[in-house]
Image (cartoon, rainbow over all chains, first blue to last red; front, side, top):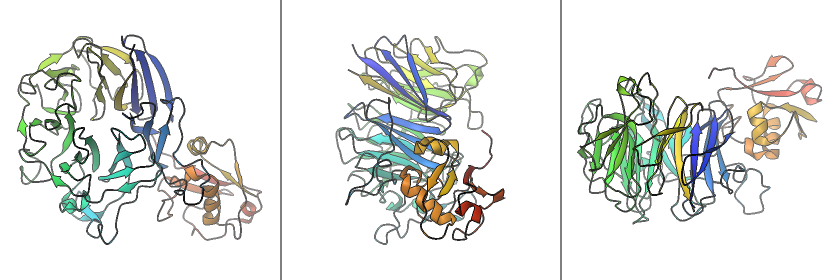
Length: 392
Length: 98
């Protein structure tokens, strides 16, 4: 029988929740790395027991952790090992250095700051880790200040893919309220050269040559909080989702607006439809129904809690526009938590399981595609990210 | 032998209990002590000072002999009591809420 492993990153550590395929009884392991912010952890599709975690601290900076046994034990890649000659130097798995080489980096040294001045790029933390679809030792990291890094040796060393910041619009990017973070990385399962990424608040970008060159894919987005609402860059994209069987169809939760693209991001159409508010952070797609999508509406950009104090997941079975509220088992009064952009995920069982975590420390599961919900845990630290692994 | 006291999170990261004892070649300074510390415990690289600039991270402080040495030049000699091992060199996470 299949089993489920839920990887939860919180403000004060990581937790691993496991269950059999019924998804009714759960074992809770953690906190791992107690006291540290765990922005994200994710397993390798190529080796589900290979996990990567982004461990950060305002005091001590960035640490990358790696597990080879499904989260039972962890190591800092390369950090414990006395290097052999020609090995990568030890203790650099947390070294994210922007490419400022003359060939690629000479124009990449500044971006726009809140006051309109130019400011040097400064690494702060890893927001999102995206392991390769096939190679457990290859993993991408989306970082703040926004850039994309890649490791091909299991997280021991990292190299920037500088074409993203260097494609031309980099100096005009500026941070949103949460910082200038690269938070979404989607690897196209049908085309290994194609990667989609999203940055707050620059927008969505795509490469078709494995990260050498990039271009903005924001046509159709409309944002009232920038001088030109239809500008090529400057949109605060919160999250993008794709179904692996249909990689040219993308769904986006923007700062405001839920959007859809049917041409790999070349153009976008709004599909907010009858949502009570189209502000929110996460968006995700059903494992077996490419037109069934989920969002969690949040009242507004300054009121980061559900409308009317009712925690509702909204599901569209039509790829957007027509939405239904899913409330069974979720609090319908006095609920004022938020659900962050990386804090929703789905398993691949049938029926498909849906999971999300809140800033109030609850992690909810629906074992029937959203019809009914139950808390797995209620009192964790604020949840930053949720990922799910469906294990054989 | 130089004694170094690490904050709890860095002791966990380096997998050490209690004080760290280091042998430091040459003058005993912030830089030489931190170089020796990072050579012995590579996981600490980047957590106390920046990988590239080697500047102290903003919320990390250096105390010894009841003095705040955080703003001393990195190549200034540390107090004799630290150099002789009578007093520890303390790496401290600055106070902050949350």
